[in-house]
Image (cartoon, rainbow, N blue to C red; front, side, top):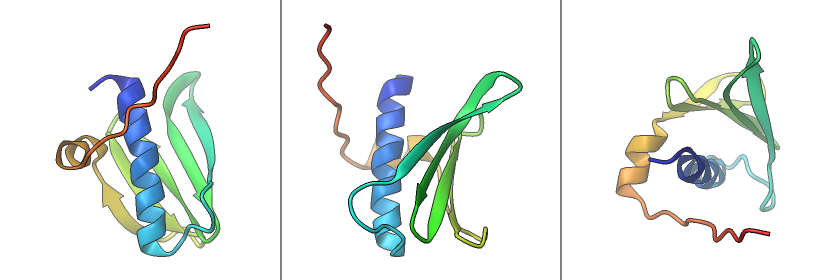
Length: 93
C-alpha cells in the first residue's frame, strides 16, 4: 500500500478509535511527525484524554490514556484490508 494512502487510513483509524474509546472531543486532533536520528519514524496523534502513536517501522498504532497506559494496539495494514478507505482527491497546482 502506498505510504500516503496508508497514512490517510491511519488518520481514519485514529479518529474512529478515539471516538470508540471516548477520548475524542470534537472532530479534530493534533498530529505530529516523529523523527529519530534524523529519520522519519512515525506520527503522534493527540486529543483530550489520550494520544496515539503510529510506529512506522513496526506498522503498529498504539493508543494511550493521558496517564500513558496502553489501551489498544492496531495494525493499520490489516485493518485497511477489512475496512473501506477514503482516498483524498489531490490536484496539482
